[in-house]
Length: 398
Ligand code: NAP
Image 1 (cartoon, rainbow, N blue to C red):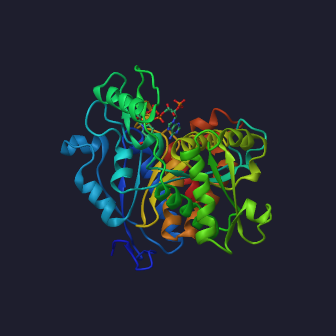
Image 2: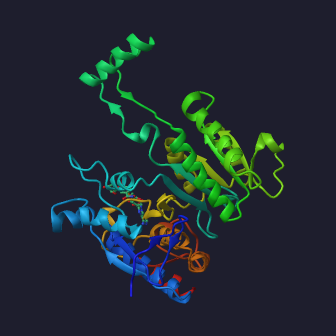
Image 3: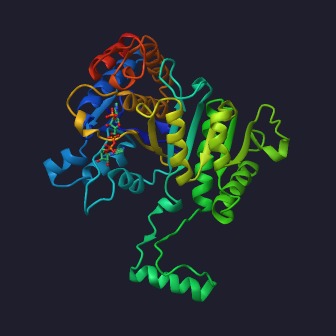
């Protein structure tokens, strides 16, 4: 019988034999990719002796049609109670209401880690010569930075008031016709994100964690992010991780923690990507970096994502692309992003074998040149298949 996942006193997840997992099918191509992803996840789980107690919850257009709400309270409650959930893409409601359903879920559940693993799958068309050198896991801070939503419109009374205040109190001369955004970066927000990256690196045998920042210019936000990262390593990870300066770049068995300026990083992921492994970065940097890396491995269409709170065990696993409405219901698009999000979900549950099986089967399918239209148009001698056929081909290779 399906049961909820709970949290043990030591903060680890207690996963029953058949955990209840809420899912949001998603708008647009959600009707195509969700059934395909679910079939692959169920098949892989069964092979490892697991079973998922899927339960549908509503959000987006389907929710609006049936309940008049874009994000019903029941849905949020289900994600809160059952701790994990998976979702297809959602239409962003235009005009009023919730700014973005994804942002709303992240804020309500305080999902402070945006996790984006980026690696190349053999056979996927890539714009670079050595995509196989990219194997990184990006931890992007999800709750702060210029993304926190503290913005004032140019000309608004509040913007004028703040500009006057800054001039009077701090002597900052800001042009009167400016819009204003505030960039908060806290010790709390930085260290909990960096802790998640370090714990991941240690648990998964990764070699290094790189703090990516613009601290050369923004000293007390980005620069502090870097400083707090090194501080955290010294405070909590002695013997398990070590900062570059404390070991001269020779960490021995420990995880090496280093840092790089964001613009140099964007060059180096092209020139020597194999020097990077786990990445911990602020919100805006992380946005650019995850998409740049995904493009480098040709994986924009299959890149998975997860939003996680490591302290409560909450996690929402999602396709990173949108609803692609013009393909909805055509059984045409690539379900890879949602399938790989399911892999992250399984890893979160500790179902590592089922997760690894899916990755291997997906890789074998693409290596056999069985792909959906998006890859087929970029590959020689590809066999173009439908969404459902692609899922079936993966299941055959499990
Ligand atoms: P989009 O839905 O991601 O689609 C843009 C293009 O990306 C598609 O036309 C298609 O390219 C390609 N694509 C996307 N998903 C694909 C898949 N699974 N397989 C193959 N190709 C795929 O972006 P959009 O058109 O800007 O946004 C549409 C809606 O989605 C908006 O309402 C937006 O707010 C929402 N959105 C939601 C999320 C989310 O829920 N996480 C994220 C982004 C956007 P080609 O036509 O060139 O083949």
